[in-house]
Length: 75
Image (cartoon, rainbow, N blue to C red; front, side, top):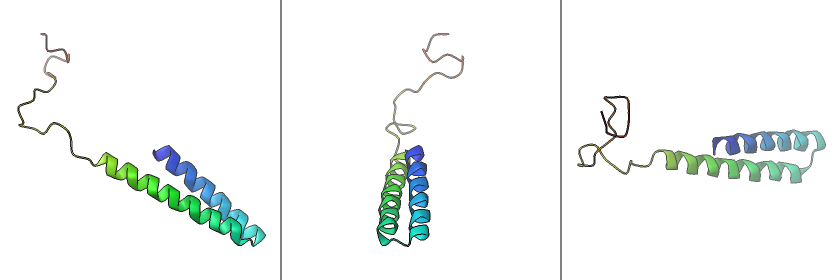
């Protein structure tokens, strides 16, 4: 998602440069639309990344055994 956001920011910047060079309002509106889409994608990515974990500590669900270096539970 972050790569998509960076790509949208680059496209928005390119549209801004084109809008400034040509003096066209259509390119400027294109820049605004692309930047708003990028902001929405970044917001969705941020909210998805801060979601609560499915298993909380102390809930009784066993976690992986990290003491032996293996995660299958055998010693």
